[in-house]
Image (cartoon, rainbow, N blue to C red; front, side):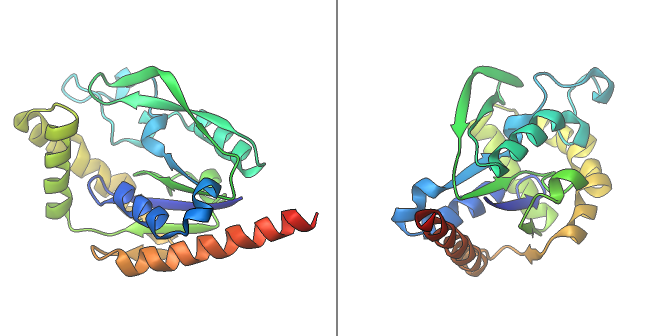
Length: 212
């Protein structure tokens, strides 16, 4: 199974980029490529020791359930199916529902700390980092959190200064060095290149399986 990791700051367009790659694939391959969101693997509730001013720090690496994520990625690599959690950002917790992922020929995994953990990083066949200016990321995050997560403007600004910006500088920005490809704000060409590579690998593996 071909595994692509897509990292970048909050608001850098990771999900959009991943979906753009999927859209560029031939429809015959759509069932062979899946999208996995690291956000689904937030801990069931924010750890108390990470809270800032009484609020959860969702931009710290330890806010994620790394054990479950590693277990699921290893299973996907073995060609198995996993039941990925579904996280509710309005309630800041996991729902009772899950989403089945795999088995498939390729996985696109996107998330802020996709490249942070060395064990997970070594599973990726292709590592991508989206490098987008902070002001653009903040504006995108603001629009998303108001529209999709029911947050107030004051809450978004406070969270940005308390956790998003400092965590980005301390933990996230350094992971850029591990990327095979660094992509800027213009993602069309990069999506074409990645989609072509994913298609190539997926088709080759389908041929191998048919021969067996």
